[in-house]
Image 1 (tube, one colour):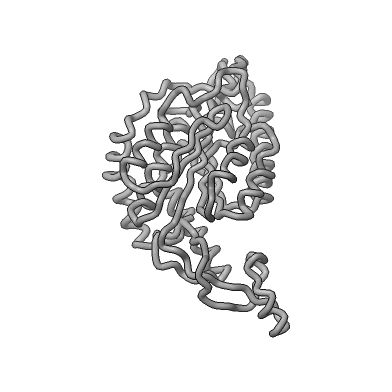
Image 2 (image 1 turned 30 degrees about the horizontal axis):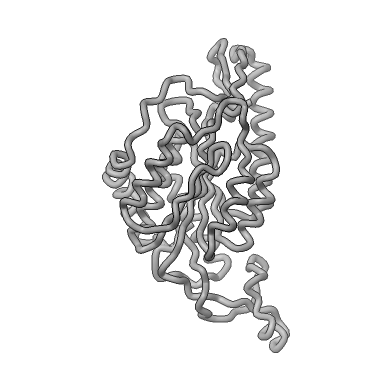
Length: 319
């Protein structure tokens, strides 16, 4: 059972406008300087305009094989594309009760809002549109893909709403959010699935289906206490999904070892599921520096693009 309540009560969430102002004066200024203009790794284009052909490499997407050229030359060749300047990015946001956990003042919901504020601000600043699907015990709200500061503020405000979370006793069904995205996303988009992935099983199949058409990035939210418990004596844990309470003795070293072992097994299963779905993954911990985490992710995307031989995009083309 993951801890379901903060050890220290977190302060109220900022208003959307206050959050965006703070992000613009702190995180975005740092990030813009460190990215050195290389925003294109944040999104991949829709690939409508053929740019070139080259010989197939093992890591290439088989859907891009040009079978006519392959038959003519006797060697597999893939198509390379120029990417559109006008892009859609979608945020699939898990706002179920478990994201309100945090071992300090930083909860996973707070971290999720900061991530969305940073990414969306970068993307809309380069002419892209952003949309959001909000989940909290069922699809809560769809905010169509638009550009502009006011639209971003609307998304951040919706993420702050306390009535998004389901009542105690209900558990997250992440596959419902992923399945709901398919009819909403009419054109190929970059999709950020922002969740702690504490859910009923079956979601990785739905995630894999989404990957068939879109560039999907799993943004996994976590807190250090979900992986390892410190020695704090008697501690009451509440499962945020079901409302169940459990008193544990964290002074017991054997209990802490069992907890860490189970958490490690859960981690391995989660990472295996994400790998099976074929998505890039960004892990965000509540004790992380957001800028450092984003830079690590951008570097990963850049190296993968180079490995695949992807033609560089002339604009903000993220994750």
